[in-house]
Length: 418
Image (tube, helix red, strand yellow):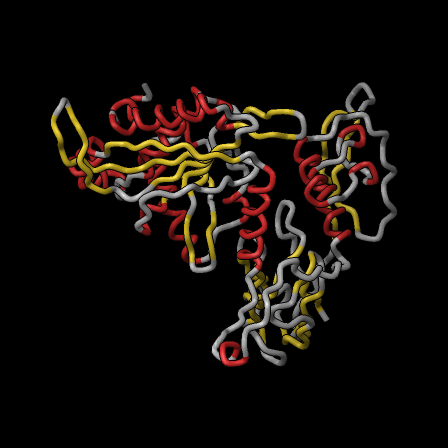
């Protein structure tokens, strides 16, 4: 028999919900054929068959919560199926000509061999390990590190988290319970269990409200210049780059310019420290049938307008198909949310923790404005910046939003990076 187990789900993800099985017991399966769909708090993924044969047993039903490494089912290998050799790759320090550990060399040893003697821990703990420890509760000091001088690596932490999650802990009952409905109303209600993604969205948004000193400042922008530019160049842009020229690319570029001037909006709090990030990973909120996801455009400041638009279009397509990966939604430094596509005229977006700022875009609507002493109808959009007042002052928040407004009302500054 070959076990089907929950694979490693990604950084800080230790459990998932069984969405649906694609095969029934007794059905033939091919190697790498999708067997079961797992839903995590970030993405949905399919678990492939580790071997060809017959699905003999399903250990967990749809809707069950499973930890990393948990048994999902078993496959009875078919005739002629070659068993796979099992080995583990470990990393250990190699000796330099001076006799001291110098560089990492990957070696393969059979599983079951005696553990290597951990070396004294002399290296500082990497930031990724500290973050994973805070999120999972696993104590790195109790882990034998495989890095140089016994340093605990990210891989060591993932292994320890998987081991700790092998025995699922009982899920506590929800704190907030509703009063029962009258009998006549209860018969007309439908109760549906929240997906893991929806539970995580609810928890993270409430945590952001409880943790951050969140405020929102507003401004409005005249979209005339951007709209003229799009109208004039949209056909040529699409013909050359194979993607439509949208509004989001201009907003991403305008935000990056403003973030460079007001770095606190691109920072986050880590204990008693403020971490200023000299890189710009811009999250773009995308609504799907299962809930809101925020894929991240990494190093957006190094991208052209066309590259940004292509990346956003690809994220939107994969979000609708449920094909986003966990790494697509990690490490964002600032987020943009466009409620205008649904007709929202004004809103106060909630921070995407641990980020300190989020920009809300809204519906473009013609409104009367005074231009050079004359009243004109202009396509106007309200902008909203929600920010963490613990590290972003009101002056900085207002200045940031003014810089975004200036960049959009004079898009040549955005294109030319002025």
